[in-house]
Amino acid sequence: MANYTRDQELKLRWENLIEFLTHKFSDGPEIDVEGVLYLIGLQEYGKPHERFKKEDNVNLIHVGLCTILEPFGHYRFDFYDDQGWPHFELVEPLPNLKPGEQSIFVKTAIVDYFVRQGVIS
Image (cartoon, rainbow, N blue to C red; front, side):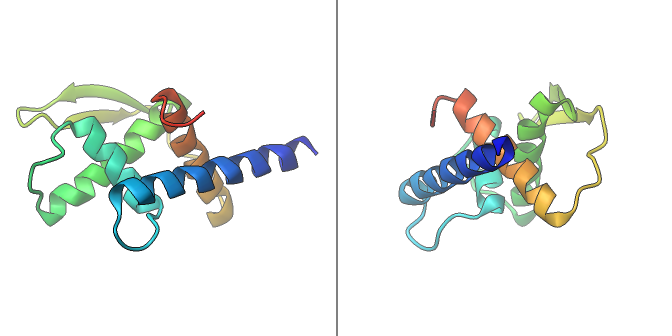
């Protein structure tokens, strides 16, 4: 029963977060997980008005992923390079998860990030 309650809480928080982010940042379809990771990476990079190349967009998603997984002990912030990009060190490999488990893990980490940021409660 505890798992069901926790899953329902995650589902509700996730839906509220996606609704909030979509309303704030998208004129079109609902923002997906990759879009949320991009926004987190953009926030952490700290230069939201810069124009980005395709490889930079991939790097922003990577920064977002490293950022959300840092509190779980998988990554540790290492340094900022000359362009201001944050770099992370892999501390502990990610567990082998089934796709559904992976999705729940990433969504949990994203929700936790936005709770720590004070965006949602």
